[in-house]
Image (tube, rainbow, N blue to C red; front, side, top):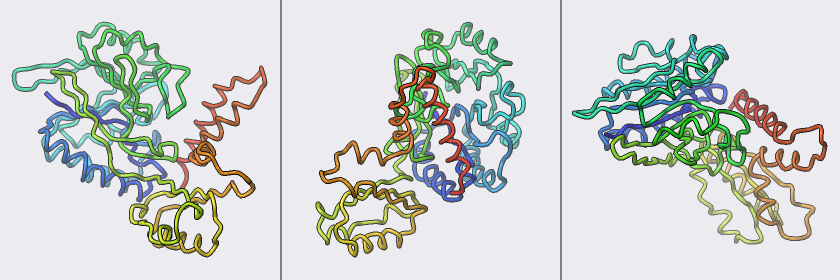
Length: 360
């Protein structure tokens, strides 16, 4: 029996950007639903953070989410078990008020899970128990741990903070649940952290698509899981939102630069890292060709003009994302009164919050 696992869809991210909604829809239309149809999937587990904002919803975003995702599930008669994640809950100390329960009540195929419980998945003559744990807070902490301890399920799904797993690439969490409490399960799957990673029997599934520059070159998608064999298949999202172009007119010919295929950059974010620009006219022509494709946003990184030697790959990587640069700066701070790890986490939270509130 195969089921689909998806998490952290964040409908409404990037200030309810229409560009991102279009990007989401392409994934569901071209990748997600065709995979479900090909595999005859009848059950989907959603592991939290379906909506992006805890406090309110944009009506246009809700309309698009229903059209591109929830209606498709209903039309296929697919049963959905959906956890409430931290972004779905209004209060931080309880899951009682949550967007998924309030906004999706019209769908008879959706079972919203906002309290810890074990569900029973029936398929033909086989039945499988799955321990389902929504966002853990002060109110349900003891209940969640008791459910994890007492359940007879061999598979656990949750929206967890687990110590030691990467919140983003290269940024491990220093806080959270100890992984020892999940050793009783053959498999534990979690949402919450958007970077896909696995250790021991715990797998962070990652979110389906890129949302910020921090996600650049970090493959996203969803999973199919066989409850009988415990095989986990990753279905990648082929659509890329964030692109980086290295411009160097010392290594590429005029023809290569002027005839570069730009079609893949339409309606995406593009960062141009300039290594060598010896011909200003050629660079202007290159940029005109890029602008004519209509990317959402173009950033030019041109920090290397004072260098007398060649630019190494590490320097190019520093132009890749802001978090990398911030982390490198924090590493240079030598002050016993400052916990560098805590400072990195604070800077990351501020950076991600800024990205999520900007107009895209």
